[in-house]
Length: 186
Image 1 (tube, rainbow, N blue to C red):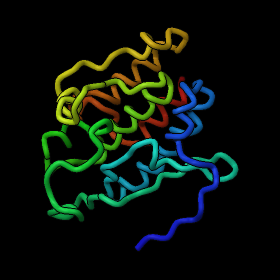
Image 2: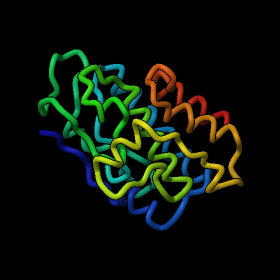
Image 3: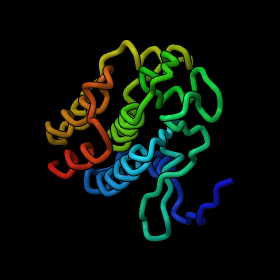
Image 4: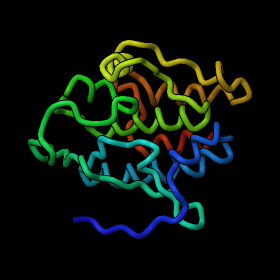
């Protein structure tokens, strides 16, 4: 089992409910999570179920990644929880929707892009009336521009979101470090 310290600051899901975050609020949250993912990915660990409820805050407002319950060790031949489609539909990468067994850290990068989109716009990029339609939106629908909801944001932030949410893993940021570096330039 896994033991984790008590997080008194609530979750990112609770913060998003209050409305969109400014870049000054969002970036200090997302960058350390990208770095934490980079650390996990270098050790062959893929989270596979990132969502705002899994990003917790301590009493000082520092963000921590939690709930590695359906983690996959990338060098193993099977996941820790079995095979098939695993994850939360609103936050699944296209390769997760396909049930791809060759999922790597770029799947988590995609999901972190969904979370960042939601943090700064107040809504998810894809919406549908059933989980299956929502999953297919990740595969088929173009990613809307964050500038449609937040024209006050810099264009390069939209470029970062678009790259992070590319349908093709090879077109995304290679790792959490690369994403964190790009966000530093914003």
